[in-house]
Image 1 (cartoon, rainbow, N blue to C red):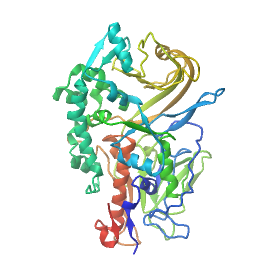
Image 2 (cartoon, one colour):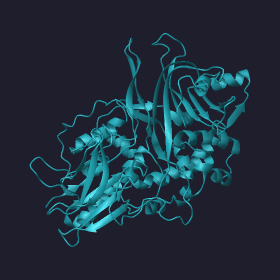
Image 3 (tube, one colour):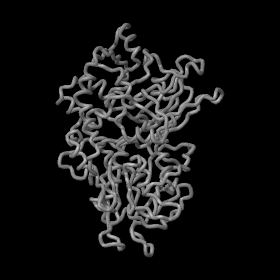
Length: 519
């Protein structure tokens, strides 16, 4: 009798195993140094060298559209100065995670990666912002704001923020954000059961209302100071999800105010996913785009076959094996899921518009006419149409012997040209520019009441296979949870759930009777 103990394996480690194929939307970049797959650990869902058949499918066959693991989590080194040998690791997407992101934290620790406490993006607000916003500040007020190094820009002048008593931040976070985080944390409890749809998960966590209501409506309903909401809270949602308060649901807006320190991985957050894949010992096909999933035409091999195309040669190939389980772990965009031909009679996956993010790294100096307090973090109001945030990644003034020179990260809705008007307004000097763009996350609009299929199905297709009357092959869709919350952590939550569902499908829902120990 084979006993599989899921509690002995780090949950995120299962992520790479069960994904039969993956397609990612990422920026074009030079191939990074890839992971070392020499780790001598055997996962029960993978094949062994001596031919023992894994529990699920003949083998794990991840197929990735690009030449790296990580998808929208993109880590890379930028060369700041070749002469001085200065370079820095940056995160274009999926920049940070927090203590509440337990799967990521545990995975990084299990993999021996190094944490760095991080002030990136809107999380800097947690340390600095309070209830008072002073427009057209006096000199003394500007000096106080300068010490906090955080500003909100409305396109014409800076709104300096002075933290007097914690004010609205504490009220907002304590009453609302922490309450939503507590509901979400139920997914980590030992007794939390697998779910067969995101709808059931949302209802089980008590978060249905938070996904149905616009944040602008919620602000008014909860009596939150409108000016604070417009000039601070909205600045956070513009960074996190690229939208104003009237365009995002409550849960997405609250995500930016979860308490606690923030972290990144010194070696790059992408390393977490490289480790997932490397330790799985899965046979991985890079630079491959899956174009079709169809019932197997192989003799004596039931299940699904896939057709994939080598992106470097354009050659299409049918898989030489059939699979009991296919996992679609990719966004439903024009270059993602919607480009794949699914089996007939598949359950439709709802069209989901994704927000295109433009990230520009700039080595240079801030324009002190625009930002006289030289902030390390700039958020914007809705009156700024194209710029969402500017943040200092690293101050290179000392290394380059040039005061004020830093590496800045700019989020925008359009591509910023080297000497264009927006760049000139933000920076007085531009030495180097690096650009990345991709479809980062869904447009986090609220679910309409009585709207059917908002999150999409977990099981897209199923069919009986001849090997046994009770056996079925299935195609699963992993990304429905992104419309609820789109983060690195929620991807691992969805994956952990799917592991449980797969065990139930293969061995029965009461799997412990046949030797399965669940956590």
